[in-house]
Image 1 (cartoon, one colour):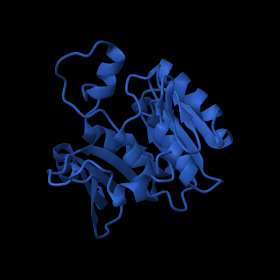
Image 2 (cartoon, helix red, strand yellow):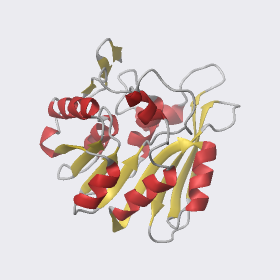
Image 3 (cartoon, helix red, strand yellow):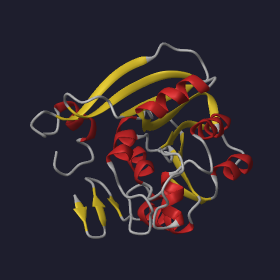
Image 4 (cartoon, one colour):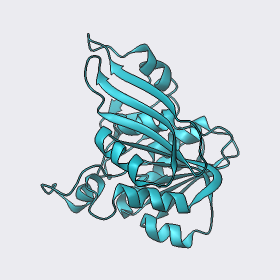
Length: 236
């Protein structure tokens, strides 16, 4: 449910008025899809409003610690406020830092790492610098995001990304990590996939392939999308 001040889910509320990028379907898909089974430590790189971190807090073991890294101070403050207002405040942590700096200094490895990174090559400027940083890959490429995530990953851990389909294909070809899970996401039945959810590990494993369509031909949510997100959306 969208309100003037944010977005309300079944177990938590997101305020995002101080964040460059608002609550969106891509983040919700990643937060609902990422495998956090048995994870004791989870890291959200570029946490923004804290949406994905909160979703993973809801889905993970009650002893799992969730860390969000966000370089924009206003967004980091808002993520902290959203965390503190949630049922899992005691195990949610915000770090206001660039992800490369965080990786050099944190001294910790994580069982699960998630990222909904900037998608687009630099182009037409947005209205402000914060939105530019959230949308465009000028600072770090997707390959660099994955490399940084890999440096923070435990040996048996898993990294989860959501990306446009073409960028996902490029990332799979450019990394030494193994893609162990993939879900091609189609917005509407009959269309080509526009997004892809990807999971990477350091050890080789057969890739688990999947597909997800959000809307059917009559613009109704599909059963598979409802099943994936029903623990979050008020409407389901």
